[in-house]
Image (cartoon, rainbow, N blue to C red; front, side, top):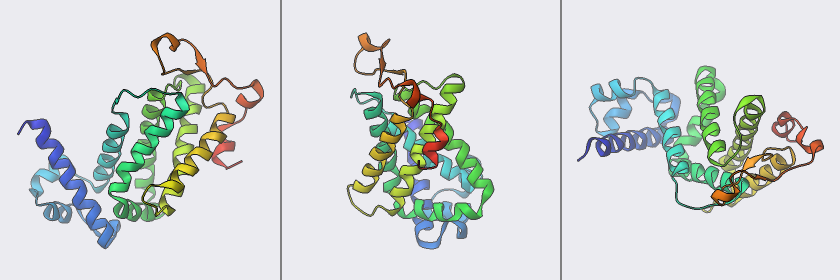
Length: 222
């Protein structure tokens, strides 16, 4: 087996074990050696690759990003693409739903992990935004990234409560959030993804009044 495939298998086996144990015992009640044993992996090798439990959560985020960012040839507006990318992330989270929910329950009681995951989420959303054609450079770009983070957080809260197989409630919440984000200028000057000839054009241009709305307003649910 090629080295890359071996690494992928190692990662997926470890993540599956971690989420399974988190679902049954609670994330705060399990240790890395226990996760390694449950996965049937060498404890020493796990120690070298993933020295902290938080490393496993960062792995989940990277795998979700990789799944979301795969180029499948589909083209759409920035809004359509952002919707698709976020739902692909949720599809990965859904595979480990019980374990992820266990992790989310512990975050209010673990500020350090919350800060680490918060930083990772900002980085993920910067990639997601860029892949959707949203400008992320400069001060305005940083604000747009924060808007995408707020959108993800808003949809994540709905996903936590969404027990439907098709994640219908999550999709409704995401569409609602996108409506609000569009009014606030998230897609202003976004790069069109539909064709190369449209690459220099802007899409979803809003009025100057709408573009002046703060992304904090979106996060506050206004």
